Image 1 (cartoon, rainbow, N blue to C red):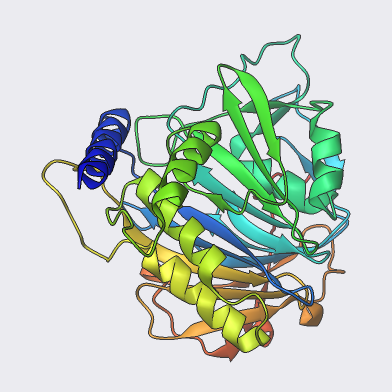
Image 2: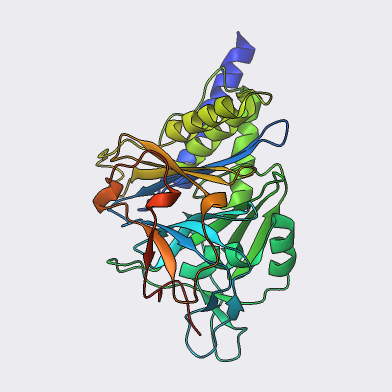
Length: 359
């Protein structure tokens, strides 16, 4: 009896501490990313996009060979895309999520604690934060390859204003690949911090990733079958996603594994239209993506559409001209209805001037 009281006291004290840590953190973007490591090389990455207003997302198929520059003025990094990719954009000016033809996935999530380095004339070439994920998809086939390059810090990451808002974007980046490897890249105190390990399967928002791991380790001692935190706070979503991705079968058919991952990412989603007087910036889930790394299938599910559809990257022509791209128009609130495999529904679009194309 005494032990139960003591354990209950410890849990309540931890919940109070977590509340104090996270209570002052409110954002307009509260997303979740989770990676499934199944047997027989079944690797699946799922993410939710939570945002207070319509993020005006469309899907784009971006060709290999395109020359890009970092869009930070004269001192911008330049590169040529090695790999084609299918991406979900934000306001059609930023890559927020995507998969390249080698099975590397990149996901941008909000992190209010982010602090980026000062960008001066003496800095390394600049890369706009809107191109951070695209730079990864264009240049790297694996997480290991990307991390090796990032450790040399080839660019200075430069943030910019969120469209329609009087604040700068504060983001962190997750990478996962067909081998199941993962990395989380953050900027803390103006310094790049890389967390690289296959075990880093889950990422949400605040606090910084090292603190998320500490919170998750505590909940693992309690056990998810006893109690799981149920709020929409980032730390609670982290714990739920971590528990469920460990609990679902690892030896299952691809259809069953995809169903499990859709279930997890829906579990950590925020119902559309939810609001709270105490947390006025709480965000509804706008859309979800699920990536089948091995088969190069990119699934998309909108909160405003009854259907889930997918893109088979193997059916996309990534050998377009330097000013061309393919676009799948998702409409207002991503409400256009698509079904099944939709690569044939992409439309060639010119001019292709966004996402740093052209030097």
